[in-house]
Length: 413
Ligand SMILES: NC(=O)c1ccc[n+]([C@@H]2O[C@H](COP(=O)([O-])OP(=O)(O)OC[C@H]3O[C@@H](n4cnc5c(N)ncnc54)[C@H](OP(=O)(O)O)[C@@H]3O)[C@@H](O)[C@H]2O)c1
Image 1 (cartoon, helix red, strand yellow):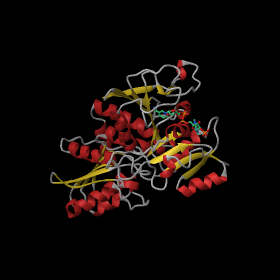
Image 2 (cartoon, rainbow, N blue to C red; image 1 turned 90 degrees about the vertical axis):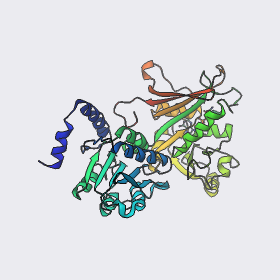
Image 3 (spheres, protein in one colour; image 1 turned 120 degrees about the horizontal axis):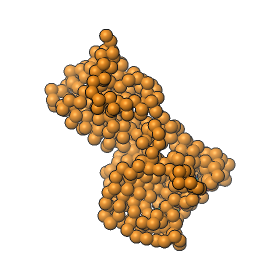
Image 4 (cartoon, rainbow, N blue to C red; image 1 turned 45 degrees about the vertical axis):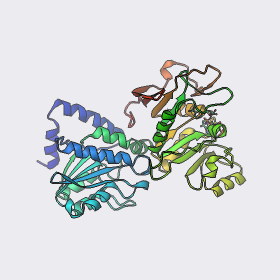
C-alpha cells in the first residue's frame, strides 16, 4: 500500500473529519486544486505553533502582493527556534526567514507553515529545497497552494525527500488569510472589500456635498487599519474632486510600505494640485483611464509619478470588469474600495464586491442626501446581490457591520 493510499484510508475515519473534508474539497475544486490534501494531525502540541504561524502571516497582509502572506514557525524539542513571515513585496518568503533564524537548530525540527511551500523557481528559489537542505524532519501545513505551479507538488517534493508531511491544520483560518491571493488565482482579479461610512438611512454626503465627517474618530481609525491590511485603496474621481483625500494608512508603524492608491478616472480629471498628485512620487498612485485621453495630461500625470492603466470604456467611466482584471494583472490581491456611490454601484452591478464593511453613524440625513450606493437597476428582489452578515462591532458611537458575498462555490464565501 502506498503512502497516499494509507493516508486516504485514515481520512475515512470519523464523520466530523469527512464533513470538514467535503468543505475543503469544494473550495479546492473551485480553485482547480486536484490533488488530495493530507490528513490533519490535530495534536494538542501542533495547534499553538500553527496559531503562531497564522498570526505571523496576518502581519504581512497588504504588503506582500503579488505574493500571499505566509507565516512559518520552526520548533525543535518543543522550543521555537525560528519564526518568519513573507516580507514586503513578497520576498523573501516566510520559510527562508524562519530557517535563517533557526540556523543549525532546524535539523530534525518541525516547520509549521500556513501555506504549502513553493517548489518552483520564481523570483526566489524553491522553499521546499531550503527546508530539505536545512534537514527539517517534519512539515505541518495549514492549506494547499492554489497556484498551479505548486498545487500539491510542494508536499510531494518534501515527502519524496523523506520529510513527514501533514496538511489541513487550521485550514479555515489559513484560507481566510489567503483569500486575496486565491481570488486572484481563481478569478483573475483582486478580492474587493467595499467600505462605506453612512448615516442610518444610508447617506454619505449632504445634498450640498458635505461628507466630513459622518462617523466618529474611532471608526475612522479603524478605517485606516483596514487600509493597512489591503494592498490598495480605490475611489472614483468624484470622491477625489469632492474630498481631496490622501487615501493612505495614517497609523504610524502599522505597515512598512504605503498602500497603492487607485483612482477610477477615465479622463484624468484629478487636479494636478490635489493631495494625491502632491504625493504621487512617494506613494504608488494608479489611474484607471480610458484610452485616448488628452496626451499632454497623460504626460503630466506620468511626470509627477503616477501610473496609468488604460482600460476600455464602459457605460459609465471605465469598464469595471476590465479595470479589476487589470488590477489583478498588475499583482493586486486585496483592494479596499472607499466609494463614492457611483463606483460602489458599478462594482455591485457587476457582482465584483466580495466583502462589505459598513460603518453606520447614529444619525439620519434624509432622501436629499447622497446615497452610499447609486442606482444600479435592480427590478426584482431576487436580483439583489445578497451578503452574509459576519459580525457587528460597536466602534465608539458608530456600528460596523461586516458582510461576505454569498456565491455558490466561491473562494471568498
Ligand atoms: N462617507 C463616505 O464614506 C464617502 C466615501 C466616498 C465618497 N463620499 C462622497 O461621495 C461623493 C462622491 O460620489 P460620486 O458617486 O460622485 O463619486 P465616485 O463614485 O467616487 O466617482 C464617480 C466617478 O468615477 C468615475 N468612474 C470611472 N469609472 C467608473 C465606473 N465604472 N463606474 C462609476 N464611476 C466611474 C466617473 O468619472 P469619469 O467618467 O470622469 O471617469 C464617475 O463620475 C462625494 O460627495 C464624497 O464626499 C463619501
